[in-house]
Image 1 (cartoon, rainbow, N blue to C red):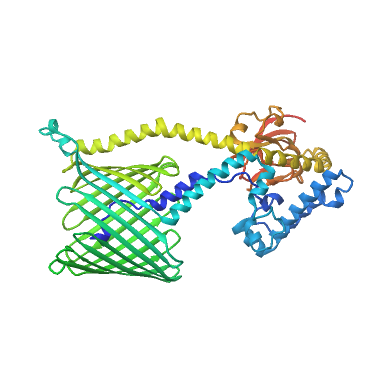
Image 2 (image 1 turned 90 degrees about the vertical axis):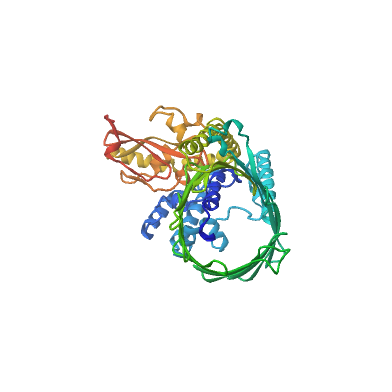
Length: 601
């Protein structure tokens, strides 16, 4: 029952995905602000061509060169740059093909197909642009850190070295009151495995490895070699040989992609139990047919049929689901005289911690096994874990540590038979230890590192924020006359008047009252956008789409890559209103639920 006998969850798929989310803030962060054409024009992603044209014309009437010809040279230059950006956004979104490319791949996608007129710099020299606007010393530190990480990553990918050391400890006498006083930890066995592979040619990859197992009465050494050959983009062959003084095993397989969703594989296995007495030893041979089918973006199923010379035939059906927040597997395997069922679920409980539960049962022999796994990412390269395996064969608690493909594992055999005391202790003690480890060491360390990354990011973005703030102030100068005229029109009809509007980092905004009168220039993480927001008012209505607000006319991003809020205080029908929204929320005012108090203007 080899195909269905493994009780541990294959958590690597989820582990990598969740680890990648942890490392989002550690890349090159000092770059040009992301361009959002929908935010620039203040239109929704499903806007019509007519609405798009109206938004473009409204902005053009302010920033077109004919409208700013009497301004200062600096203001004229800024208006031309802003109009160029507005024009790029309009030209992209009005063209269905460009719009489709932009929706899928952003500005980078347009650059790749040569259809974007808003190039952000020399793509071959990204550091050149960063050095121009950023802090060279800070960038140097980031570059050196990324260079070291890249060097390690390239080395690991070139040789793909993996090691595993396991030492099994026997503590089963601890639960026996008669032998407890004589109990000493006993090392049952120790195993060391190592393998690496390297690319020989574009089509060939070589794998070499070895294993050493030490156990009373069962010591052995193994040497393994394998070769993978890519015949075509859809066909791959593998050959592996594992040999020792006691046995030799060969496995040959050929996998072929029938279509993008279906893969078929044929595997032939042959082995002998005693290499020194080759002619007299029993030989085992097996042929396996495997078909895997991707049923959807998150779910796949496989069918496996094996013919074994000694044990007969075996059939197995398995299903795997990989979602955003959990992963599940299930399988049923059967032979002529036995059936085994296996199921498991794995999910994250935090950004760095994952738990998995799995179980397996053999129907006719009435044996079962239950596993509970927990792993925690100490850093992006170090992982600690603990797992509890209990069943008909006893109770085993396993501790593990993994770094860069090197894994150390210590299985502790606690009891030959299940007992309440042993089971509760095996669950409670590791849970308390890992909880204290997280509370005392990991959580404070993560908060400190998060704070350090935040301060480093703000230092690196300081020059860019200052430059974007100057651009926003230029916008405000260019729209001031228009805003004054519209404000008078709104006052005449007792319409919508923006009293105060602030845009900035969420926590900083939470510490400031709705209308405290403080100058936003005194707070580096908050921008005053009162004039910019009044510019968006039309016929006593204001609508902002569910897109980042930082690229609206007169706005800028005071804290890139951080959560932001927009707080608005406005008068409508001589009554004071106020509301606060998240950066990506839609804003529609006036609304009655925003009413604060009655007051005559």
